[in-house]
Image (cartoon, one colour):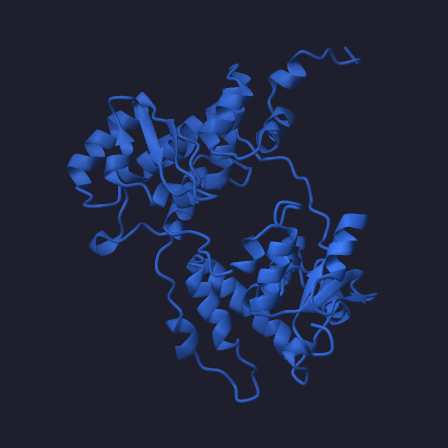
Length: 363
């Protein structure tokens, strides 16, 4: 936005050819504030821009077509909670177009709630300002206000995402706040428990269903969301594989199925008779994520494991134990569904075989 008008910003490395082509665009100007050229944002100008640079430079079109769904497999977005809630008269509500865009892009319901909550906190901090007039300095001031409240880095990143979503996706201003600094990510090592503790965990489950849940979380390296979305057909007993659909990043993959888990699953299936999902709650509904977490925590308490154990700790332990037994890092990456090998490499920092080869200088 320049002087309350929507513009197309053109940022590029110094190049005489590009500079000459920009001069031929309709009414080009230079912004010292944004350090880029710009022209009025109209449909006609967008077409001229693409035709001018076609075959000369590469343009990322994704930002210009912001209605493309993030995932076509997410459950239907439910925004009724937003409309039915009680609010005070002075409270500034999230714009309707913000909600509409979240629905069109098929964001997960949990993401919708997070974005709406954080964006409303932001716009209520600037009650007297028009949203279009808020700039980078205002956002930095708000982030500084949150930092003084000692919020976490992940909290700050979610706030930034919710704000950027409005200006860049809802209003269609690509990279509107590209200069906003994000907090430096913390590189924490994954928490892992031993094989002996895994066995103790399984032995201290309350029933067969709970035992199957823990065996699949660990034996197949599943995320909690992947486990509760498993369907009966996803268990491939002939090939001893578990099919994991629509995982993080909208990818499908296969993971291992243990003989021990399959044996228990066959008995579980006969006794519990699930209809659609492998693990179901009341009225054949999808099992809740909270229930899965409770099962793992209760088993860990009974097993007297002092370390905090969550479903993701079991996934970390699966990967680490595979690495310790000599499985190739690339194979582990495929089983976990990691898009980058760098994500999987973190397990080399906790695998004991990394350190066993090193002789301690004290000894």
